[in-house]
Length: 341
Ligand code: 5GP
Ligand code: MN
Ligand code: MN
Image (cartoon, rainbow, N blue to C red; front, top):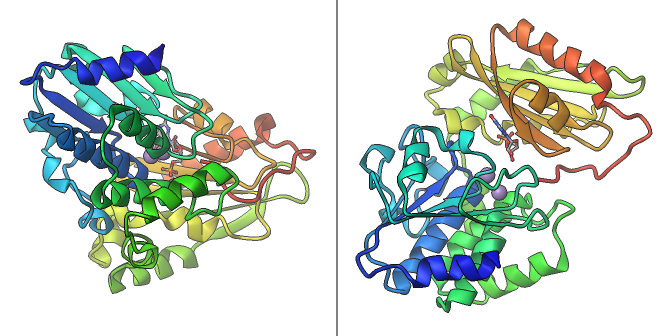
């Protein structure tokens, strides 16, 4: 089975076998936490030549700069050119690997650990559980089967990952099994209040002011189907500059917009370059935003999806409105009122 193959890929590594861990571009808590938690587990098991990396700018978002295992990280440019084993975390498709796709091609073996339903199983071995609330659920199971100890540092990584992808245990996929895993992690002595404050509830003053500007230009308009609303806003590079903030500061912006009671669909445009935007979309249930995202070159889930868009703000907004008018909205469908990652 895939599990047996995954266990063998690790246990049958030669002692000098080089292992390269990769998570997705613009890493979130699940990407980094799953990768570093597994990396620390491998280290405890005696795996020595071991690196962790992610494509794009080698910049860890400020909230994660206290995560255990950060010393495993190297810039993508310094990652082993031809590792014996590549392990990918929270990556649904090779497009999210950026320039690091060449490491996958040259690796002796590759293992994909993920939970996206849309995962294309691009590894030689794929442990993909679409029912898992986070990639860290798969990671915890694999570490357990490998016989790695669950110590407090590993637990902190996996807890941050689990809390990130469940919206701090608020979304529908927060099953009894999720709380049981959280209990095992907390039993190592973690302090959930302190971790939540550090990871989710701490922002520089400039970021608070930036959110003020960006939220002030939020627009609410009717959706293609009567009675439903669409709410959106955008943030430019100039906004970031004016408040001295980095792009990752805008990752939680969609959460401040999607709460709008009158809207089923929400999206934010986050400027990446002159005419390039990272788009985050959310639905409360009546709309399949992954249909919109896929049609516009991206991907994701029914209630949470994203893509990269090119053009001016009005161009991009018009393109999204047009896609929403092509049957993505089902007025008969009401679903959970929080995103299901
Ligand atoms: P977020 O809005 O939090 O960045 O992303 C929400 C979901 O949409 C993610 O879980 C991811 O699956 C998907 N997603 C976001 N951006 C992209 C993108 O550019 N390409 C693809 N294929 N999926 C994306
Ligand atoms: Mn992720
Ligand atoms: Mn995830």
